[in-house]
Every structure is written in C-alpha cells, then in structure tokens.
Amino acid sequence: MNVRDAKAHLRSALKNRRDSLTKDQQENEAKKILPLVLSLPAWKNSQTVCLYASFAGELPTQSLLIATLQSGKKLLLPRVNPNHQPSLHVVDDLSKLTLSPLGIFEPSETAARVSPLRVDFFLVPGIAFDRQGNRLGHGSGFYDRLLAEIKSDAFCLGYAHNFQLVPSIPHEAHDKKVHAIATPSGIIEAEPAS
Image (cartoon, rainbow, N blue to C red; front, side, top):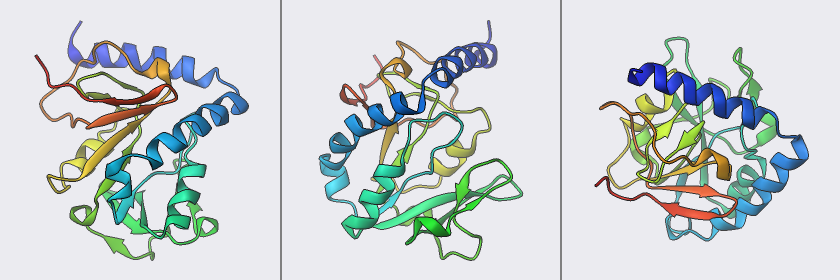
C-alpha cells in the first residue's frame, strides 16, 4: 500500500470512530483538555494564538476560543480562500464568525489579516497524530501550507481524542509536524524520530 492509500485508509477508520461520538462525549473530552492547554508554558508565554473553529465531528474548540478571548491574547482564526490558500484573521467576537461554504465558522474576509509569522502558538486539528509529531489531516493540505509559512519558534499543538493518537502515521516530506499533542489523558511531547 502506498503512502496516499495508507493515509486514506487511516483517515476513513478514525473519522468513522470520531463521528460515532455523541455531542456530550465530545464536550466532556474537550473539558478535560482545556486546563491542560491553558497550563502549557508555550500557551502562557504566547501573545498571538491561532486556533480554529471545530466542525464536522472535530473535538470542540469553543471553550478554548472563549478562554483565549478572556485571556487578552490576540486570537486569530484561519479562513479558506477561493484559491485554497490559508489566511489568518483577528477575532474579537465569536458572534461575528460566518459560516463558510465548507460549513466552517470563519472570520469575515474584512477582519484584520495577520501574517502567520506573527503567531506564537498554533492549535492544529487532525484526524490522527503519532508520538513523533506527525499529523494526518483531512487531506486537502490546508494546514501543511499554513504551517510552512510560520516562524521557526512558533509552538504547534495537535488537539485530539486519545484514540486519535496512533503508533505511526504514513508521512511525506511536505507534511508538517506538531511539537506536542493535547489529549484528554494529557499532553504528549513529540519524540524525535529514531
């Protein structure tokens, strides 16, 4: 099986498992993760953070979005542009988010735009992560393109259910890694590949 097929197989299996969870199960898992994220030194030391509005069965981010606004940090969310290139925009009021054609809540295109080079902390979604920091996304390459533009000392945190942490993810040279993964059981620091 080639890398593309292996990714598709893993993506399908884990999406099915994730999608079988109830909204209450999802919310309970997110509540366990919130204090873990807020206690991270990388979070505490950040001024500008890029999160995302969860959708399509992803682990909820609403509580973290609210906590970010309450903390006084600059909150950015990504927008998917017509050319599929990511852009980051300031959010100061969650009620101003608009629903995109993909069903994702995003900032309006008129919200102030900020370069990815200005971001200290990224919360990164994924279908799966492994202990080396490899990530399996939805397959469009959106976050790989975004993370290719960030500053070298920006902290990237994966955000996932326990079952989304797998032994190994097939990966390619263009796939971007995370520094750690936040799960309900704890923060897992990425290990260097051996």
